[in-house]
Image: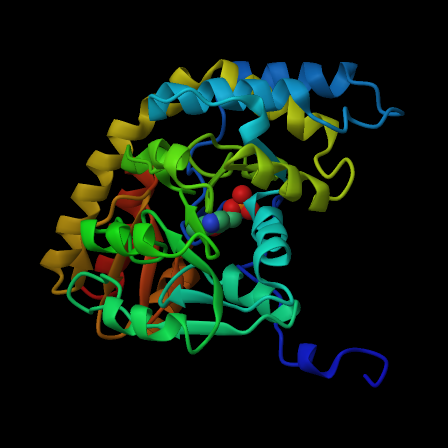
Length: 355
Ligand SMILES: Cc1ncc(COP(=O)(O)O)c(C=O)c1O
């Protein structure tokens, strides 16, 4: 390995259980995707796209029509006017996380995260040689240790702060105190608010962007909009920030099919998002059932439940053997909330193992 950077030797690829698309169907509750696929009528439209889109042409490098559709969509749930030049695109929001790291922190300083949180901020930062400062969270509600956050800023030369709203894996929204702290950061520090689960939470910081040119909101088509296979994410930010993020995107990073599928999903977003009340109801049902097993379960604003059972690894392994995949992360279990039948199987499999 003498031909590669020595500091990359310790990195491990981001992994979830491999999927055998042709094997026994598993209940995949380990990646916070939508449990139910897109409806048949949308699949037909996607098939038509696949049949008719030219395969020998590059995509429109600017993705103007997709950005226009996203800006209109953001406006529907944020209540503020958003222009297409406030939207940057990524091959999944993962690509945007890397672009933000390059734009805000590379050769400038480190990043700050509050663990447990989404692991890709740290993984991607390390891949770029960017130092990662980590603070903790209060065990009762996973609120960030703000005293530690304040103390870390100057001495650790933090150039960017990454927060998730609601946080993954713990499901909690940013508190008023956390938001105030983010607002108090100097304009030289980039603030990333990752709202990957925003549709489930029904809340957003997008209205703040008008006053905060150093803030970037990240969103994705991979969760509520049910297009994880297409890998489309977007950032909402000031036009000057967007220009930089767009310059860092690989040319044509989004395949034509993915960009068109994303546009199609937005044309039908009302229908695709109509299952959110049912997911919230199922989240409450699972939370209650797991609490009744004696597990510690935290309130969640996402499409997942975070819990600790006292024997988490054992639970994860036993469920996997019975056909339900869940994720062990951050010292607990993160379980995607799916359809009621999937939740029924989860609870039945737990009861078979631990009556
Ligand atoms: C908080 C958070 N941000 C970003 C992502 C990545 O999303 P994408 O599929 O758009 O790359 C995930 C995926 O699980 C996530 O949980």
